[in-house]
Length: 170
Image (cartoon, rainbow, N blue to C red; front, top):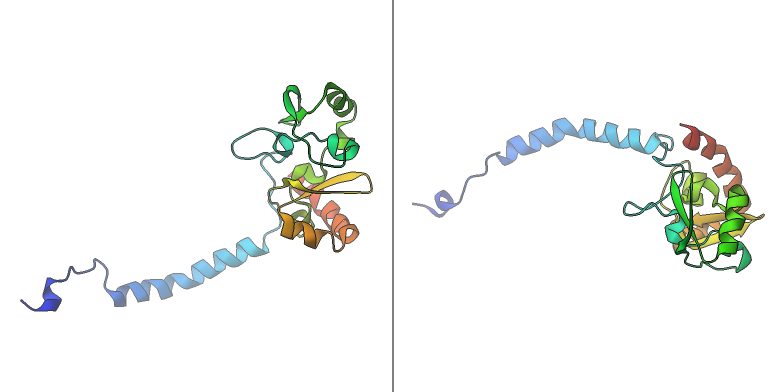
């Protein structure tokens, strides 16, 4: 028995594997280019929540961004439901303020990443990476994306405002 005969034989020869790969390459390229060229798909929910929770802003108090200038964790003792998500607040006063004017305090684009929305895409929003511009709360994917966002927020807001209705209403 030779050394090569003792090796297990693959179920698909290398030549057949390469031929199949070459044959499928145009399909893979077509699918990839379609995905890249596609406009933002509608988010399943009007408010971004994680896969593991129904909490908007990851449970952070939407009003506190405006009143305290920082991300403050909310409490399950001060919560409300709005647009399919649970909103938590650090105090009864913040809860009352939100219930009276949810559109004023809720993050733009439902809490999805504002920079991604400006690009016509959706991405998660991180409640710790936020900015207030013209009395509107914007969240971004992460610190690096927030840095990009802060380079020209007015332009990005105009772009995102143009994309959001189609995503929101689809």
